Length: 405
Image 1 (cartoon, one colour):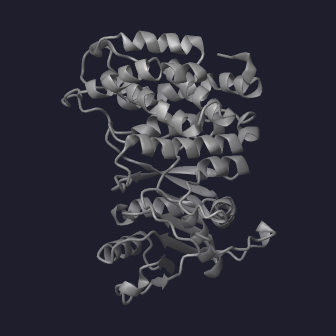
Image 2 (image 1 turned 45 degrees about the horizontal axis):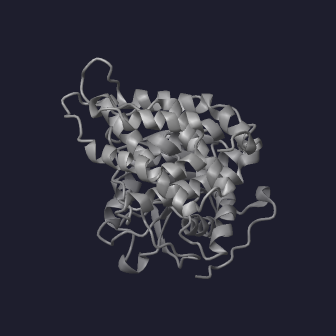
């Protein structure tokens, strides 16, 4: 669909953003809006807040909270999905911030009524301290958010020098210049009719030299993706992420390593029974037989040898070495850039390898026997391995012909 074009400010220092705070809400049921407004009133008592929602026609007023100014808007671009923030969401938030002279914006995704008032206050406070991008640190159970743990967090930290634990969060605090920059990025997609395209705010902010803060957000209900098929979900996210890495290659090849996240995740409940990982490992072993030729076009001999050993390893002893997984991710990133094979086939070939990593992670972090470790400790150690192996990706990116399978 064709999207409305929004003229960006030629001079960011001359933007119309003022001292006001805009809260830009994603689509939510009318029944959830009163709880959202109540949380905002508690978070910002007596402050004049503009709350923008496309569902204003279903709500007669701001629920009697005088300090909240509820406004409706017609989206400049419309996104169909609600489980992540999309290009359309950033474009809409920029338009709203400009129209309402808001220097600071909270961009909140679906199910935002589950955010606590303290989480909302933390996001705004980080912006008030001079940061351009405030990223929430959610409290998740150890077995949740594993795509983030396996791929998004360690790669963002290693390549972009930015350590927020959830780089593809569904809520953000944005200064005016941050929302303007992200809207400019988003417009490249919406102009091509890709309103649902994923935008990577942490990577974009890091590359643009914007300041980033991570804030505690506690528990939150996270909306579920519409795709029931892991292959489609992982393909969508990984493909978009690889594209962002390709676009920002000039930046990350010279960026510095960031310190780790300042926040911790929930510790493992050692009474939790180890999960049944056999279906994941069956998928991996079947793929080793059926996809070996494809993998051999992407991965160097040492990685293929490591996968062969894993395919023969009994379930209780199954452990994917962190350096093997890091090399796999980096080699798939390079293969995406070089179009070594059809990109759809490439991303499909990554799924069973991801399942092997998940099985290994769950076996390593479940139970209380010797040799097991806390989930967050493993994820932080994995991120450090990605940092150490960044030189491998830089070298292969610059001289891909050094490995010719």
